[in-house]
Image 1 (cartoon, rainbow, N blue to C red):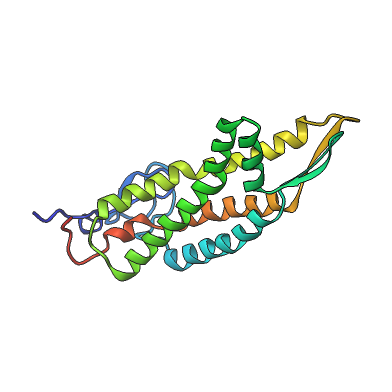
Image 2 (cartoon, rainbow, N blue to C red):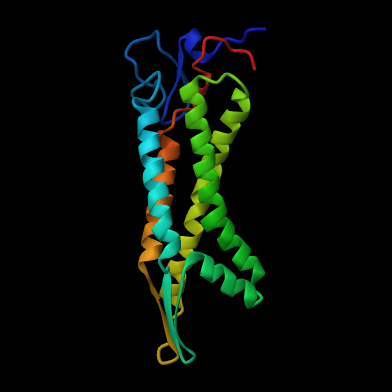
Length: 205
């Protein structure tokens, strides 16, 4: 059974409030929030590729460069993202180490892989598993903000864990690159138009 898509019914989803609007009526604005309606986001594929590849390039220094420098009575030390995970794990804080690893490594890598999969399948006009790919995109929107957890941890440590004569914690360039990666991957996710998944000649799942 062929199921019509929204475009065939003259409907368009508002990007701001997500209401299904009738494109046959004039003006082409959302009746609920007044936003201008577009059948598809302009240059969505090109913009998403550009943002994702830029984030992927910046992800290298984000992991190689230290994210913080610690000064204490035990001496000075610097830590990268993975280095801080290993240190926390060895110190017995395996729960915090796991959270930071998921937020700083698992989530970004998953976003790179899923966005790459969506972009490649849309470019090839793949008609298979479109519902599953749409769910993958919705999952990206849901988990994307958790990537900021590592940045928040470093910011809180820098602001709160100041020991005066006993020690201090200072941010390092790695945290800046990681913050840029988080912002760019979030923008890449928002730039992608999931409706492109359904822009095919046939509509069989």
